[in-house]
Length: 124
Image (cartoon, rainbow, N blue to C red; front, side):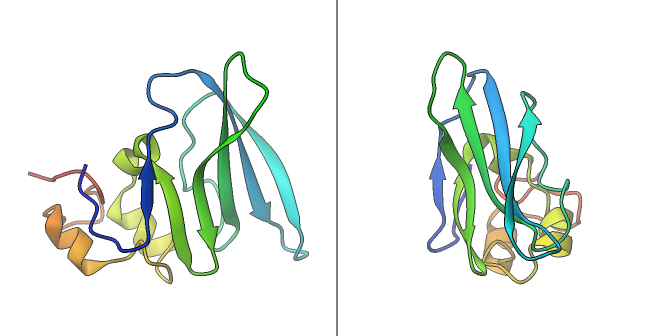
């Protein structure tokens, strides 16, 4: 995993654990809402540009939620390794182009050349 984006903290809360995911999104009416996602690792492409604010993970057998993705304004401030490893350049370029995730130095560090390449995993 390669991260050159300043201010982005990469955590490892999910790992191999099973659990439930929920998202906090900004709906069209302008207020925040919580959506239950389920137990599968969520894709960041489920929402429209600017709607997704936070993804939380509740490990099985616990009653607390861990933040595994969070945005604050135009900056992504936290992302879990499991989410980061599946994130593609095309998703960032379409949905997060006005955030710090779209970083040409990061793309260069992982040898990303197409929209199908990964953002945080070395592309060969």
